[in-house]
Image (cartoon, rainbow, N blue to C red):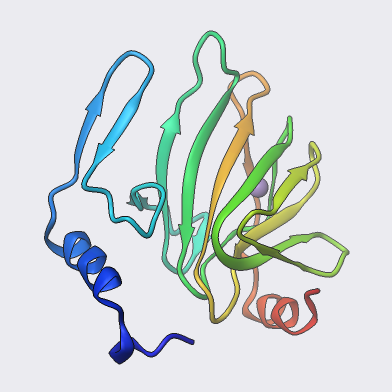
Length: 172
Ligand code: MN
């Protein structure tokens, strides 16, 4: 746990620009250049995710939408400690790339797994699962989610507090 009072000048500068800097975003045909993005995060946090599909504070920044070449949507999802998706499935699977922090991934009927920055999770089609932060750490991942017709996710029930606690206690 980082002591906030021993924050380095570098981090303080980043934090200051996060709080006060305007984020300008220049779009061209194929390149999205972010100016003045805080130097300690790869992508902007984005918008809060819908409470009907997520528990806690989670945010989504869409990076690539489906187009004629890419039959998927790609976004960066930020989970504050305790935040997670509902249980859900993807008809054509999903790939997660963890870019920051530490969190959890769990398939129904299996123990949760700890996922950390640099980990890649290749989620099979129609496998019931959830992903998110753990109780004490923030986690950020890129998600590439494939489409089948116009569906890329089927949302199910929230991950209960008891399920989340158990996952935190038993995850490896
Ligand atoms: Mn998923």
